[in-house]
Length: 229
Length: 229
DNA sequence: TGTGGGTCTTGTGTCGACAATTGGCGTGCC
DNA sequence: GGCACGCCAATTGTCGACACAAGACCCACA
Image (cartoon, rainbow over the protein chains, first blue to last red):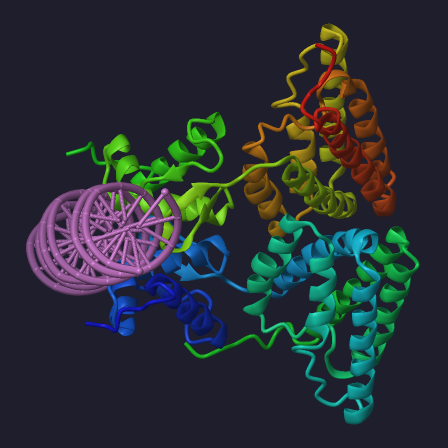
């Protein structure tokens, strides 16, 4: 009855729908995921829905409670900080490895990227600096340049999804755009100098700044965490 | 018909059976996993088997090829080295965090552990030092002491399973038992001194040694093993 | 009126079957 | 003799249904 899906599987689609819905907040943290209800909502059977949920569980976006069903994973300030800490460790290592393997051409590419960023910042005076394809690209390219497939997977597949539910907009938020750009330059300089120790240090410092910004940001908004029933 | 499983689900059991079989080598890397065949072999239906495979995929033990089925993930020397590199980054960070949070009592526990190790090494003169409950415990306790749930999960659930397929026996192999013990002592000393930087450095150095041992171990057998016949 | 037991509903875990796609194989044509 | 086309079997993706378990609800009884 449904048009025969040629490319992605129904389970694939259900996974993306569910992930999107969870990120959008349609299913808030703690909400129960009813397989039958979801299957009816999606117009498919329970099988693919189950598979999608299984995958969400693997990505730690939902938590299974024995025979009681799954709930959207609880979020917390601490959890976000913990994720950013893990990111710090992994991306630091990625930067170290990249420093040893990246080609001169790719270094030039990174340079061009930063120049573009600088112009953007100048234009909008740090207003709403959309770093979606910007900062992400800088970090992502370094991650790829590490040449470590396991590291790449953990960062750009696992961690990425986990961070996404926090709608985490990387470090370049509000006023930190300029500092971040500076830190990016320092990272790139260390990579150019082929100094892995320094490169890892700079990347860790950069990400630590971002993490600390999040830590402080929340301390001031700790209590007002009420929401509708 | 089958005795109603009270505790673990059939999918849980199938997952463990499959993981064990993969590790044992019953299904060598590259082997196809036939859902129907497996379900008949296990005496269950395809549903739970599918779920188990899904979970194996999440743990990166098998690779799915579109509508063509799943194969046991390929292994390689490089892959093992990459995993150990990731471990280096994560456990280094765990050690840093643990240094800031671990209690004095737990530090004493670690000390006792190392004393036990020392005795074991003395007894068997570094022979077949079974560090299954030994070294693992030392590292595991530090990981737990990090207090970072995400880090703990990634190390003791994800990475652990990935390393297991290599039957990786940690660093304490052959003659490195004594050096490893020494390195453990250095780590513990740094933790006692509440010096996170030093603790992370020592842990990274320790794991880097182990990794390098693996790297070299293979380099000598890289060419088609032409040791004098 | 509070509590205990029993029932009843909801939902997961599991099963068997159908359909569509993939890859292999045989056959026919150039 | 080689290549291409088409058929066939095998296996995955998907579906609907059944059974047991967990929690909610209700009623009777102290």
